[in-house]
Image 1 (cartoon, rainbow, N blue to C red):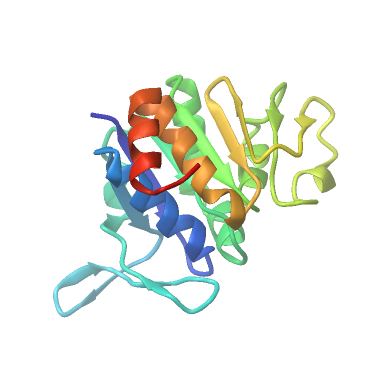
Image 2 (cartoon, rainbow, N blue to C red):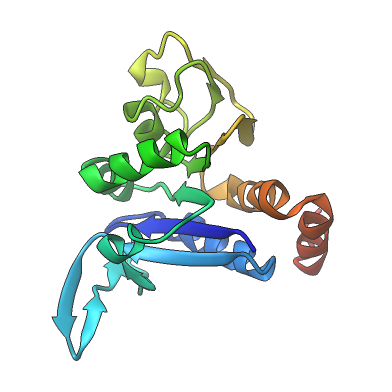
Length: 191
């Protein structure tokens, strides 16, 4: 069974985060959500994350604990300031570089593909993002596309909240095959 890490940061786009988590779990993919911060309250080490539109998400674990585990894919939800918070955390860049060096998948949606660019993972790749986010970086060796989802080698990118379902289903196809993608899509009445 594939194992996916989804770091969630304060201000993430909840529609993207929840859609990706839910849809991957429907495909029986092991999903671990990790918060950037930890705290001790009522015996809990995980700090709830308030997303961009006020939805409170409770991560499965902390990023520090997650970094000791093995994952087949790292998926970054977008949203602001969530993507900035992920981008400003050196542990995220360390994980991205480690995943790339191990020939594992990295994926990002909305504003988060900019994090992949900052980690030099879009070099020589095709990619997409929320309009303007990676275009502003003037990446000479990155072909920017307007497709809902762009899959180039071990890097998968997507545009935003409205493409989250396509993005999540693409991740299922990559990790578990087209038959599993079709099965999950049918159960969701997604055409």
